[in-house]
Structure formats: structure tokens, C-alpha cells
Length: 366
Ligand SMILES: Nc1ncnc2c1ncn2[C@@H]1O[C@H](COP(=O)(O)OP(=O)(O)OP(=O)(O)O)[C@@H](O)[C@H]1O
Ligand SMILES: CC(=O)N[C@H]1[C@@H]2OC[C@@H](O2)[C@@H](O)[C@@H]1O[C@H](C)C(=O)O
Image (cartoon, rainbow, N blue to C red; front, side, top):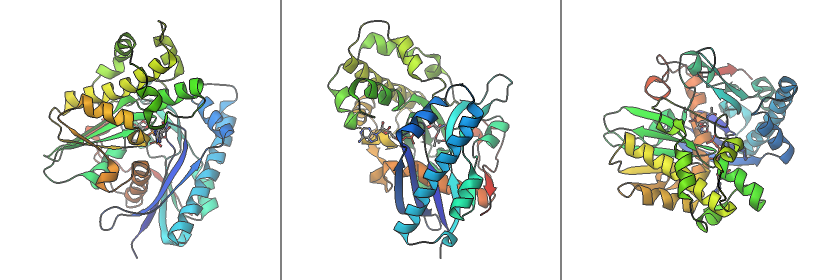
């Protein structure tokens, strides 16, 4: 029987948990996919914990416990769907919930915090849990993110082919896999997070389905220019970002003139697409193919804008390459769990800037 791994991802969009059960013995094979939304109180608390607040250690621990219960529910759903038992699964890779990401802050080492309680998840599932994947990279001088590029190579890479893999979650990140075997990976900037928040505020919807609201507006060029002047966009990789920088107050600080809510949404969509296109042109002029995953791949308007800004590149959904957009990151953490239990070092340097290859993650035995 092949070794099975479960991957659980709850990302910066805070929409909930995506999980997969997968095998990697002969290529990547996803046997089941399950999701669980966050209930509004947990989502609000996780969002609030992205900023300093009262009694945050206590609140953070309770939120981590609550998060693990949602993770356990996804694990049980995956086992039921795939007709596997806990004993059939070698390990779970649990990402946790990023609430702070400051890899180079203050003391030159910095930190990244993913709320999780892997011990509780091991108790609730009876399966070994690999977690805390980012901190070793930060300790080794890296950004701690993005980590999916190593999986992107395993999943989408082809010998002697140059291609890009783009994840558009709350934040967007780009992986460039070059024909010569080298790679680059970094966060481009906002993905859906600012759009989601603006849409909730003005439309009462958690996200702009298919980008329809944005598509009916017109980007405000002065606002777009001002947003693109944020120094993060021009800075060189290795680099990573998050809600620490791209939060509602950042957007509020940009809104100096009177732009209609719908045109602001159109401008935010254009910002996501333009920042990505700028990065592709800067680091991979003549890129033949860009495989898009994450929830943003389901946003037709965003996909059309990306294609228009990158006319020489074929922009396609990861679905066309064998893995649906909402399964890619969860599959990445299943794969990272496998690397962790095998004590395989990942060649981090060209992507995160870490000093050398390291084993990522720690293990909580069942
Ligand atoms: N049908 C759709 N139309 C438009 N946008 C969508 C659609 N479905 C999902 N999305 C967007 O995708 C987001 C979720 O994406 P995803 O699950 O990839 O993010 P994440 O994993 O939380 O974030 P990150 O990759 O930054 O960690 C939603 O918040 C929403 O903005
Ligand atoms: C610190 C953190 O949680 N970063 C996330 C976030 O969401 C997208 C982007 O920013 C990426 O850098 C990363 O997630 C993916 C899974 C990664 O590590 O590749």
C-alpha cells in the first residue's frame, strides 16, 4: 500500500480549511478533498489576532484549539471519503493559521507565527502530525515563505521547461521554475485579501464571485499608481509579505480622493494583476506558461486581466495541469509532511534566502 499523507491549509484569506489526502509514490495523486468554513466568530477572532490586542496569548491559544477541532473534522471527512483509517495515514501536515509574519523584524532574526496546537490534533485524530514548517527557515535567515514552490516543482515541473506557478490566495505568490533546474519563489503582494474585505464592507459578500463586481467598475489610474508605489513591489526577492503590511488600514491610507466603491474594487483587482504581471516581466520575460492556483484562479475577471497584461504567456488554471486550484496548497502541506518525516532537506536558499538546505517542520507522534 502506498504511503498516504494528509495536508491541511488555512491561509491568509481566512475563508476556512482545505484538506487533501494524497500519495506521492508515483507522481502526485489526490484521493480526496474536503473543506470546512470557519464559523464567523472564529474567523473574526483569527482576523483580530493578526493585530496586537488585549490578552492575546490566552486568546491565541483558545483560537488554536478551536482551529484544531476544525482541522480534525476535515481529517475525519477525508478518511470517510477515501475509506482509509487513521492507521493508513503516515502523517498529517498542518499549516496552522498565520497571525504574524515578520521574518526580519527588530532583532535581525525576526519571527513568523502560525497558530496551531499539533498535540491536540494528534490526540483528536490518532495520526502523527507534522507542523511548524516555517520557523526553521526563519531561524536559518530565510523569509519562512513561500514554501509551496518546492512542491510546485514536484507537481508541475518538467525537465527542460520554463514555467511559472502562481498562487492567488489572500496574498499572491509566484514560483518560477527554469529550464536549467533553478527556481525562484516569492510573494508578489495582495491576492484576494483586500478585495474580500472591501467586498464584504460594501456588498455584504465575503468575496467577489468571479470578479463580477470588479469587472463592472473602472480602475482608477491615480489610485492604482499610488498603490503600486508601495516599496514592497519594487523590492527584490527573497521577499514575503502578509496582512502585516496589506491590511485595511493600508487601503484606507491610499483612499485620498473620491473613488466609488465599485471602482475601488476594480482598482484592487487591477493591483493584484498588475503587481503579478510586473514581477513576471521583471524575473521571467518571455515566460511561456503560467499555471494559476488558489481561489483567485476561480475569479474569471482576474484571470482575464492577467492574460491581457501578459499577452505572450499562456495563463491557465492548475485544473488543466491535473490539480484543481483549491487543492494545490493543501497538497503542498501533505508533501511537506512527507519531506519532514523522511528528514529530507529542502534547498531553501534560492527561494526563501535561508543559509542552506534544512528539514522543515517538527513531528508530534500520534
Ligand atoms: N468563485 C470565486 N470567484 C472569485 N474569487 C474566489 C472564488 N472562489 C474563491 N475565491 C477567492 O479565493 C479566496 C480563497 O483562496 P485560497 O483558499 O486559495 O486562499 P488561502 O489559502 O486562504 O490564502 P493564502 O494562499 O494567501 O494562504 C477567497 O477568499 C476568495 O477571495
Ligand atoms: C507566512 C505565510 O503564511 N505566508 C503564506 C501567505 O499565503 C500566500 C503567501 O502568503 C505565501 O507566502 C504563504 O503561503 C504559501 C502556502 C507558501 O508558503 O507557499
